[in-house]
Amino acid sequence: MPFPQTARTFRLLLSIVIIALFVTLQSVSASGGVVWTGTYYNNEFLTGSPTFVRSDSSVAFNWGSNSPGNGINADKFSVRWTTDTYFEAGTYRFSVVADDNVYLRVDYPAQAQINTFSNPAVGFYVNVDLPLTAGIHHIQLDYQELMGDANVFLTWENLGTDALVPITNAPSPITYVPAPVVEAPLPVTSGGSGSWTAQYYGNIDFYGSPLLIVAEPGPSHNWGSGSPAVNIPADNFSARWLSFPTLAAGTYRVNARADDGIRVYIDGVLSINEWHAASEKTYTIVLSLTAGQHSLQVDYYEASGLAYLDFSIAPIVDVPALAPVVNQPVSLATGRVNTGERLNVRSEPDASAPILVKIRRTHTYPIIGRNSDNSWWQINVDGTIGWVYWRYIDVTSPQTVPVVRGAAVPSVSQAPVTGIIVRPTTNLNMRSVPSTGGAIIGRVPKDNQVSVVGRNASGTWLQINDGRSTGWISAQFAPLPSGTSVASIPVTG
Image 1 (spheres, rainbow, N blue to C red):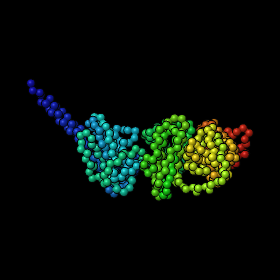
Image 2 (cartoon, helix red, strand yellow):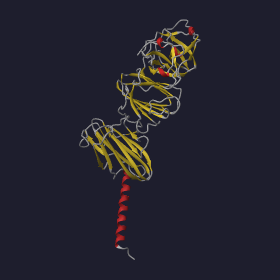
Image 3 (spheres, rainbow, N blue to C red):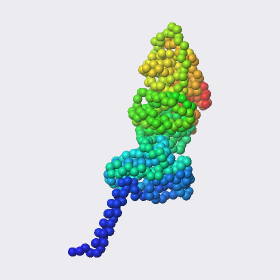
Image 4 (spheres, helix red, strand yellow):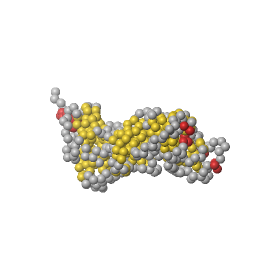
């Protein structure tokens, strides 16, 4: 019996829909037939209200020195393209070439699979191979134009079924390079001062937006069992510091040490990669740098327990050889660390010299030399020769120690002599001035021994030195030793 006319019509329409859907699903395997939502911003950070939103049939634009549309400047703009489209199961090669920077995210990953913000790849293919299951997948491409020409091209191919077709109309040279994995520098959104931009995250893998962005003098910190800020957890956090200093040509030594993990990028090159639990070792590299501006990036994560990071980069200066000393006595001295949780051992008898290694309180080491005013001791830490400040180590048989350096050059960070030691009753912020409005320049953990070097006129704040830097802590939570008069402390702020 034949179908009624309405039933035949319905089946015909259903067949047409299925065929059309099949054709559409097949076409996206090689990045064709995709409709994108393009959200355009008249700034380079994808912030605020978009200037306009439109549908784009592809991400293949070469605007040159022109604007992408009305209300958008030719420079300093950004675009986000998104789409949800069907993929057959397979491994796909996603390729991007752009001037200037891009993020590519497929299916909401913790980190972008392609990221060129901190490792520029202008005019180069950047690609990544991703296995995808059959079904709908979300694709997001963030683009940032800074200045000069503007162009961006995105394509993908199924490695099992498609021939690899080059991106058409793309700028040359066309060369595949590994996809960078670092995040973009962001504008400072909270207080602070310094030449580094610090970004703090509430997790160990830089996921999501930073909880704090602040300018700081450098990456070195000792948080102890505390945290960098009230909104940052004491454990399981990460931080990233970015700086673009102008350096003289020369050979530089980079030292890095952390509890727990640390990575250092020099001009976009991963130069130190110690992304693991804490170690007592200081990681050192020596490299030659040309004169001019360079990019520095330090990544850090804290898992649990104590949290600290030491980082330094300094030119290597030739030190004149010492004249041989006739009948120089052999040192029989040893030194026992008497301060803090750890003590810096520096490359020279100077509080600003690079840190070679850190040693723990109560540990004992051979003393092999001193400077002529006895303000620094030279020690041997398992074959590493360095210098420690006299106040933080108790030396036995000092009369046997030979003089191997002249008097120390006074340093602003070297602690004045007061002889007063305090131990905070709680974790304290160390600030730049004697006020809660001062910038936080460090942390002093509870019960950590620090030297008092001064006070404010009212005695409500103490100026202290923790072996690395000098700053201010609240006297309310750092009681003076019994019998010590506040009047005996010089007023320094």
